[in-house]
Image (cartoon, rainbow, N blue to C red; front, side, top):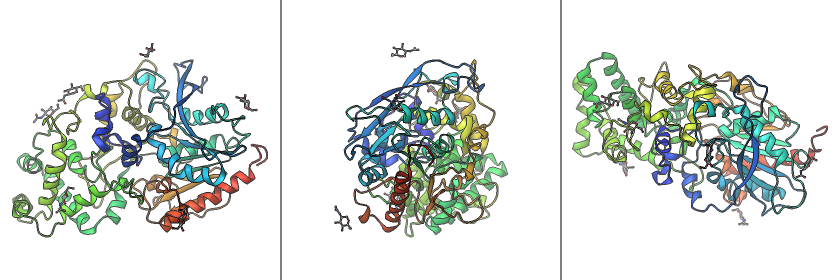
Length: 536
Ligand SMILES: *[C@@H]1O[C@H](CO)[C@@H](O)[C@H](O)[C@H]1NC(C)=O
Ligand SMILES: *[C@@H]1O[C@H](CO)[C@@H](O)[C@H](O)[C@H]1NC(C)=O
Ligand SMILES: *[C@@H]1O[C@H](CO)[C@@H](O)[C@H](O)[C@H]1NC(C)=O
Ligand SMILES: *[C@@H]1O[C@H](CO)[C@@H](O)[C@H](O)[C@H]1NC(C)=O
Ligand SMILES: *[C@@H]1O[C@H](CO)[C@@H](O)[C@H](O)[C@H]1NC(C)=O
Ligand SMILES: *[C@@H]1O[C@H](CO)[C@@H](O)[C@H](O)[C@H]1NC(C)=O
């Protein structure tokens, strides 16, 4: 997720005008959100859902009674009586920002194939599905993976679809879930917990493993990014970190000054800002490797390649090339090859986003995060909800690797992100966040090894999140699919790239087409075998 999203949302100025800033989180929605909002056409319905599904659990000592209105949106244009229900798990964004999945994406593909009904369920504490008017630490206690998983179960057994004849609840009607990213993990955990209820579930790029620090986010970029660009960034970062390690304050100031960021007192903020074009910790205003997509309408990846072509520009003007040697006195005369292009990009693309000019502030678009008051604002907002999940149970702080080459400065470590948690969620009466995320609440479902009959796990091998998924490189051995536990790794694909479609599977690029055909075959098996939950 991206902090600038958080900044914007907390400031109460949440708007898509800021482009990708709102697209926080593990998810890819940047381009998708911007484009789809304009064509929002599905009507919002609501279901009254218990705020607390676990009235006897000590995890929720305040045991709030009552319900909240959880929003859902459905498409019945392909539906024929007796058809299945395809439930798109909303995850960490608004229901509206998922509409493309009903119109042209995976749910559309499945609805068309099986005469099904497609429905998006908005996650609690996102969009307009807030149980409370604010999001204090006590109120956010009810935002947990297990409560969201229970929402899916509750929805499948209580949903009504105005205008559609008959009772479509599960398990009488076959229900098949689909979720990408965090929603993919929720899909997997729902299949694991309420297996008898669902005919099947597809977790796409399902981040089922929780870890505290996640330096691997940068691995696919290092591995597959333009190699001369990558090696130059690594070399520049090494030089910056050597200067930081030297504690030579004059030299450190010179490094910050050359990027125009001399006023950032926090080294973490400086390191985060120059990491923005690659992807700063939870936070970046332009599009990165993660926002690439096979589907041109959703790909927002040009930013990353432009950044790189600035760094690899073979014939920059002397005003830019001279910067390569401006800091050479700190490196025994060695040039900082590519620094001029890097600095030029930061100064022309990033700095102007801070329209108030107060670079060292939390004003929208600016570059400081050192502001407790700012974080402590309890107003509802998706970025705040996502930060709470991160701080309380999911972790996955983007940090520099402990050894070896790095695309981001080693100034970016766990405490930098943890500080935001501490500021944002002071202890409440009934709830307090742990000193670091309580990962066990997520990993109890199985982490990389989560398994459930009829749970399909599909990943992309160039995805920045893949190492938290079933096909993680951190797990040894090749994963072999089976009918009971289907899995698929799309070579060359990023973060849940199977979500998107073009209304004609045959015309898709072959690697996406084959993944979609596999999903169709898998789902066909589930639907044909479904016996209303009894003796599957
Ligand atoms: C929440 O806000 C709504 C609309 O402003 C108001 O009607 C309601 O009373 C508020 N609820 C609480 C618990 O403050
Ligand atoms: C639908 O069927 C289920 C299971 O038979 C039942 O519990 C539920 O009340 C029914 N819902 C409606 C709206 O009739
Ligand atoms: C930058 O902001 C921080 C936090 O508000 C403050 O402590 C620091 O003095 C500021 N630095 C400069 C150079 O103004
Ligand atoms: C540098 O980045 C800008 C902004 O994306 C882009 O327009 C420009 O073409 C890039 N310059 C080079 C030399 O690639
Ligand atoms: C800190 O945050 C508050 C509340 O959002 C804001 O009014 C103030 O301007 C911020 N200060 C700085 C230095 O960013
Ligand atoms: C779908 O794409 C295939 C392959 O390009 C093409 O032959 C077919 O006509 C297309 N179908 C429709 C309905 O456009």
